[in-house]
Amino acid sequence: MGIIRAILIFLILSIIAFNSELMAELKPSIVKNDSTSNSLDTKAQKRSRLQSNQKNILSWRRSAQNRGMSPNGYLALIITSMQKMIILPPSGNPPIEYVISTSKFGIGSTENSNKTPLGWHRVNERIGHGKPAGAVFSSRRFTGKVIPHTELNNPNSEDMVLTRILWLEGLEPGKNSGNGIDSHSRCIYIHGTNQEQLLGQPASHGCIRMSNEDVIELFEMTMNTDFYCVIL
Image 1 (cartoon, helix red, strand yellow):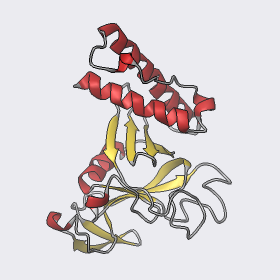
Image 2: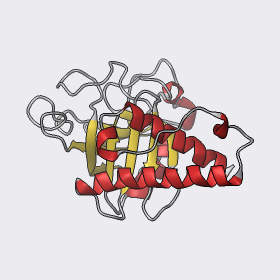
Image 3: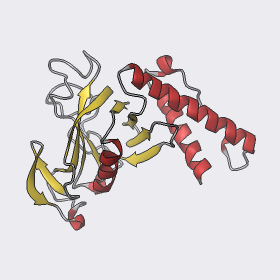
Image 4: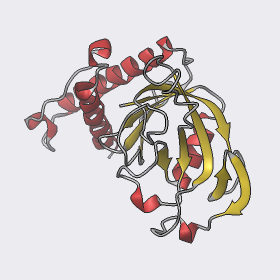
């Protein structure tokens, strides 16, 4: 199962590279949909793909470090077309995949557009450490209210920011940083949601939604180091 998961991650990373403007910068390998991708793969073929996967990961991490991420930092690839987040940990640890929701209004950086911005970001503020799952935040302050687990997928509930907040800062002036397009000023977060049933499809008002369990895990994992992300 570990090899199969690693191969699936490699395929996702390759699709990202193929569709991204960062392809020219990173130049990762592209997987072809041929007979080497089926269950009859030889050990040598699987090993070769895993090695290519590792090179691809190192290319992404190197690009993040060029933007200021420390070698022990975490990098997230947020793939709007797949509604997935791929975490690339330090020290050669295997990637981690989460299901997310980005904006139902599409991608874009314009202020008041409610769209999810593209490009490179870093987390510059973390809010909610120690609060229970389902904790409700308003203007980044805990309201004292906690949504019970049984109400985290209520289709009739209003959109809420729950559990943890990872506040993003855009790193690309003219794209996601600066007057009228600034991700930080627009309050673009990674956060928990009370509409978990919508994860896996565009549903937010610009932020990146996660399940409350997943956002706690991500928050704790990255709390004591740099956390960068690129939204694609």
